[in-house]
Each structure stands twice: as C-alpha cells, then as structure tokens.
Amino acid sequence: MTTSTPDLICPVCGTANPAVRQFCRKCAADLRAPVGDPHGAAGPAPAPVSLRPIVLGVAAAIVVLVALMGLLFALGGSPSPSPTPPQTPSAQVSDAPTLAPTLTPTSLPTEAPTVVPPPTPTTIPATAAAGDPFVDTLSGPGRASCTGTNGTGTPGYIHLKWTASNTTGVRLSIDPPAPNDAYDFGYDDYPADGEADVPFTCDPPNSDANGEFHLYVVTTLHDNGRFAWRFLRVYLRD
Image (cartoon, rainbow, N blue to C red):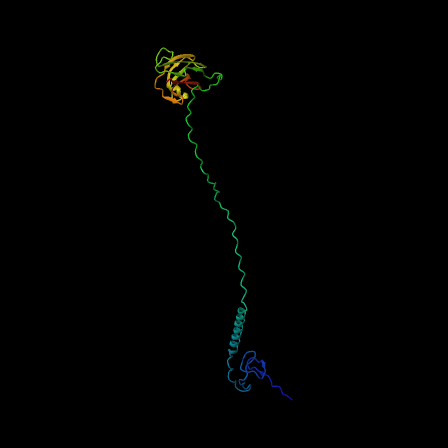
C-alpha cells in the first residue's frame, strides 16, 4: 500500500503546494525554510521573495515573440500595401486665346497707271438733270499748224466753238494739269454759247501715241457746287 506525501503549506501565504516543490506556486516563497515554534519565540524572518522566476518567464516570452517575428519575416513578411496606381493627369484647358493662323500677305496692287484721255472729247450725257450746268458741245480742228493761221487770219491761232446750258458762262483753259482741275488755270471767260480764236504754240507740253498736242478745256462758271466741263485735244501738224 502506497502512502501519499503530504502537501507543503506555504508559510507566507498559506497556499498548499506539492511536496516536490521548492518554492510556493503562488507567492514564490521558499517552502524549505524552517518554521518557528508556534509556542516559543518567533523564528527568523522569512527570506525575501526571489524575482528570478519572473525575470526568466519574461525573457522566455520575449524569446518566443522574437522567434515568431523571425519566422513571419522568413515566410515572406507582412504583405506590403498595394501601390497606389498613378493617376492619369487630366487634360488641362489652356486659358490662352487661340492664335489665328498666320496669313501670308499678298502682294499689294501696284499703282494704277495714269490714264491718258483719248483724242476725242469725253463722253458727256446727252442732257443734264434739271437745273444742272452742262457743256453741250466743244469743237475745233483735230490738228493744226503752230506757224499757220489755221483759218483765223493770225499765225499760231486756232478757232474753237462751244455751247453750254444752265450756266451764266464758261471758262476756257489751255493745257491745265487735268480737265477736272482746269478751272483754276483759266485763259479767259466767255458767254455760255460762243466762239473764239485762241493760241496754238509750237511747244505743246502734252504728247501721246498720236503726237504732241495742246489740251483745251471749257468749264461752266461757278463759285461752288456743281459744274460741268468738256475738253478737246488739238495735235501739232508735222
């Protein structure tokens, strides 16, 4: 028959411990320390509580934790966060105004050539509007001699004749810059319907494909407002 070993009672906290233990399973007090006589003087003070078991337990836990972390990293570690996909930049709208396409400059038109009036008088309307001045006719020789009388009785002269309407008279000009500017270059003033012998010199200032000529212009008299004119070219006879 087997006899069981009695439990050891912790002298500090009173906890029952198996007989094989050295220290109390509750307070870690030394179970092998002598117990004082309860009837006599108090025995020696109990030994201080040893911290070695606590330190050993904490160290063991740290070792286990480190081992687990090492194993985790060995197996691939913690999953890395998925990289954030790059954002596709949206198209930027420019505030700058759209430039107009560059235009290639075209060649500028050359200056219009000076138009020389034809030998015959310019075309004048057959009738003038009511109240408007009008030079109806202007006649003279087409060619003349600068040394002959040309039917006038005086060498170096020609005979001109004209009619005009709605005017008090006309002004005759010889070789003005242009027919429409003849009024300021008058030779003499005459009645609206008239005729006269006028000079025809040997040095005409004008010429064209038909030869040298004098330009005679008859303009209705006026101070301002509307006026009319008619011209005639008389060429120098060879």
